[in-house]
Structures are given as structure tokens and as C-alpha cells.
Image (tube, rainbow, N blue to C red; front, top):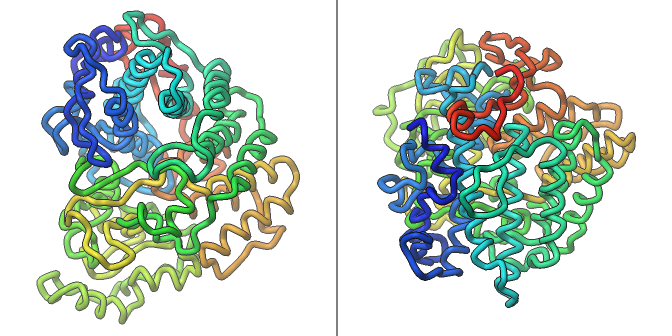
Length: 555
């Protein structure tokens, strides 16, 4: 990355705003250029759609070619992928097996520094998106028609979401509210926390009522759920807990009158989750994805292709990257260590060429009870979506080092397969939307808030309600509902959805020895690491170009 690029991003007069131009985006809208230095017109509706497209696209020509961010690896620098990597790869949920890739050992072991490229990618992406949102908001600042008012409210929500990720990941943000030549100022801690809550409070009245927005646009329930999320983490962000407000806003989402928990977990992560009514009733705000119209190497392509390898049956994609596998700690949240369905050690796995098709692999796997359905039945939990069968090679739960895709179980939660059996739009690039907000978060937020407010029986009821919808054959007793049980339930419900690091930090488990997992701290059995890693470093490149920003302690 060029040393002066962050200066270009955050000095708005130099922003490459032409990157808002000429993209075929969601709902077939073509987005015209809104570069204030190259176009005399402003296409408001097209520019508005681009604000949502920033969540799911990385540039102007699909997979690669004209990236949003000059000088960046386009496949690595999208909104969701950069956040996912920071929130998942250092945690107890998954491992990126290609340990020779840039910054991957540091993320696996929680050992990055201020020159980390991956932390820079997410920092630049968040700042870039906010700059585009500021430009849009300035352009429509004086408009009072109903649609402009609603668009302004939704973009303020999206900007607050981005600042919430800055607060969560870095503890601070390079802060601006307008598109101008001024460098951002540093805003963090309680100041940034208060700004986010104020923004969400001021814009909510002009957003759609719950369930009334077109699928893919934010409504009041999305606003309330983001507020609940930020309130739940108040002690981390400000030093003062606010579980009462976390509970209040989770209540508002649950009692909104529209959203319902889905009674078939897998439906929310399939290619028709934007058409299946059960899935849509739980998904409050998705990132729209389409195998023909929104091709990129982030988003659900990353989640589906990254968790598959050649030979796995029913992949839903012809492109298995062989990258992401489960850490043992995640698998053991569903199984006792000696109960994980695995191919016996003394059984040789046939080569892939020995299987005629997916059905042949299924038939072989059925002999040893290693299909995904066997996993679900053994765990007694519909969320146990793993695969340890013959497709793709024999997995192990006890690798001496992370050497490849067989160094753990495959995760098959994300799928490019439709629930109705119809064909997807593309066999390589998924149609699967990403549920960025869904109702289960409100239930677990309320449960945790009640637990911390010494209302354990109320927390217990929400946990039982959620687990009943997930086909769980065993419910916890009231005495079994401990802090660590809650932390595990967050993982069982939301693994591989880009939030785990935040939960671990809130429970004081990310860096400490309170909870260890495989390869934490760079050793197989896990060890504690320095508390400086509870936030990411401000990229050195930004510090060199903006003296308003200061490095986080310890970096």
C-alpha cells in the first residue's frame, strides 16, 4: 500500500469518488458517477443504492479490475471480509489454514502490530465508506421530500454502523460528518459511543416500520438492534455498563410485531434466503448477494468457497478454496470430545476418483456416520453444521500443526444451495445473502442483559426459546446457565458470522487465561496474550499522514 494512500482516503477533496460510478448493483440499478469533480449532476437514487452496495461490493467491475480502494487487494478489502477476518480469525471459531498468507499467523496467534496489512484494510474500508456516506448526506442536506428524508435516515444509520465497527475494533475513529478538505479528528471511547447512540436516536423516526422496508434496506428494528448491540458492549467501550438499555432495545426488536425466529436454522444461510419466508422473517438486515450481479471475493463467496474443498459433496459451488476450517474449541461446543462423528483412524479413505458422484460419497460416509445430518443428530442441535466425511480427504481433530484443510472439521453452515431445489444463478459465485442483523441476536442480548442484571430466570426463558427453535434436544437447567454457558451459546448461534471477537472481549476471555482454545497465543493448548490486543492498532500509515490520530496503547 502506498504510504500516502490513507491521506487520500481521509482528505475528502482527494477521494476517488468516481468509484461510485458505473456499477451494476442490487435490483438492477445502474449507478452513475457522482464524482463532484467530474460530473455536474448528482443521481440521488443511484447514489443511495451505492451506500448499501458498499456493504457487499468491492469495486466497479465485479470480481476485480476497478477497485474502490486504489492500491488494495480488491478481493481482500471488502467491507464484510475485512470485518469478518478481524472478528473471527483470531478467535476460538475458525482458522485460515494457509499460514504463509500475509498476516495470517499473526491473526491466528493474536500477535499483530501497527504495520499489519489486514488491520489497515479494515480501517481504510470503514473510512472510505464513511467518506462516501458523508458526501451523500451533504448532497441531500436541504431536501425535505419524504423519500429524501427516509434515505437520509438510512444512510445515517449505515454511517453509525461503520462508526460502531471503528469503536469496536479500534476503540476510536478518524471522525468526520461532512465531505470537505479537513482531516478527520480523533473521536473514541464515550465520545464516539455517545455520537453513535445520538445518531441512531435522531434518525429512527424517519426509517421504515419493522418489516416494511424492501428486503436489504434497514428499518427501525435494525436501528434498535444496533443500539442494543452497542449498549450491551458499553462497559468495554466506555467503562460503564448499560444492560438496562441493552435489554430495552432488544425488547423493542422482539416485540416489534413482525420478526420471528426461524424454526429451520439452515434456511437463513442458503441461496434463497431472500425468498424463503421463514428465513426472511428472522433476517432483519441482510447484505444482498447475487451470483450474477454482485460477484466479488468477499461476502458470501468468501464464506462458501473458503469453507469448501474439491470432492466435498453438495458444495453449492464449483470453486472450493480449501481455506477456512473449524477450531476444535468450536466443535466441542456441540460435542463431547469423544463423541464427534469421525472416520475411524484405522479406516483408509478412498481417493476422490474412486467415487462416481456425490451420492457415492454420501453412501460411504453413511457407513461411519460422518455426514452433516449425522453431526446434527449426534449433537442434538440443528446448528451443528460440520462435515468430517471422505469428500476432500480425512480430517483430524488433533493436528500437531496447522498444515492444511484436513487439520480440522469442515464448516458447511453457509451454502449456495436453494431450499426449494431450484438452480442458483451461478455455480461458482453464491446468491446467498449475509444476515448482518437477525432476530436471534435480540434474544441473546436480552438473555445476557437479564443474566447480568441478576434476573437469571428471565435469561433462562430466552435461551430455552431460542434453543427450542434450533431443534436442540437438551435444554439447560437454571443452574447450568452460567456466564460461560452464555458465551458458548453466542458461539453456537452465531459462529462464522463475524462477531465472535467482540463477545469474547465482553466476557473478558479474548486475551486472558480465563478461557483458552487451540492455537491461542501460538501454542497448541492455548495461552494468554497481552491485553493490548483487545483493540487493533491504528495503522502506521494513517499516523504518518494525520497528526490528529494517536496510536493505541502498547503498539
